[in-house]
Length: 403
Image (cartoon, rainbow, N blue to C red):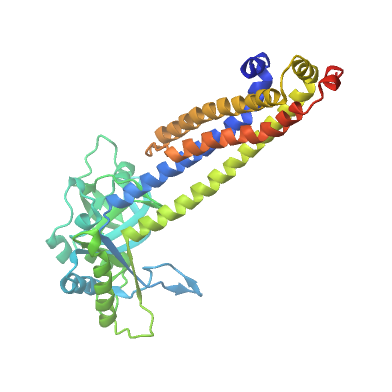
């Protein structure tokens, strides 16, 4: 009887379901997209290695404003080489020196990209290999040879698809460099585009591009340390901290002039932040469920008023108050259940569409579907409870005389 009544008022029933549909689909789509983006970023960070330790120089300050970790000249290439020799947990160490917004020119094409000066261990430690050509050799490093390895995006910006970049000449800061390799594509990790880079030998970068040397050697922004596995990171971090403190003559209570982080901590922090954001946005989307519940309550109250004579007639021929209560409560539950089912399907479809368009993993957490459908049932019971109770308490004689 509840289904027949709803079917005879299709438009009203459909509009009543709309609030629940929007609420459930929003909750599922938002949580799914949040989980997909989180998973995609975690995979990219893990692709760089979960057994990697990053050591950055201290922050330089200009006018009292910090320029960010790695901007001061407190670490040197000699520090990185000492770590490679003196830290047992280290299997490889790659020093790096970067320069944002360097100009790279080929013919009439002029682009701005990030310059990375590094050594021979960088491909291994960063888990990024040349797709074409080769990386630097020891000779390139020893004589500061003007050769360059391009990120895949830089290669595409400078060369046509049919052109061979290997062996071509480019100009960086007015100096000529020969392209010897093109790195494989890695995409973006957070704000960093791993493909929008040009790699130079550390010695050339220091001497020709940056020109920023410490008194004790070649200044670097930091270095990456590879351990045998993620379980060795804590040991490596402890050992690195002690070695650098000794080399830099740092004694308590002096602050370190470097910062040590590891990929596992980055993943944990990112997961925590994304989880909180997804939960917050999902909760905001859940407010529309409350709006949907209010809509159901309003429609059911109007329905009770419209069907006063029908209720009186049913009670006059023997329908109990419980039967009337069940009928109206069932109508509210049917509306919310059907709306919940449609909302789940729509939410999954939206999440799948977003994952396909923006190319991140399609993930639908089971808890979001269960919670979404459970909430729709709860909304139906709560929203239909008071109108159903009002209908059940109507006096049959007064109801039969009602308009």
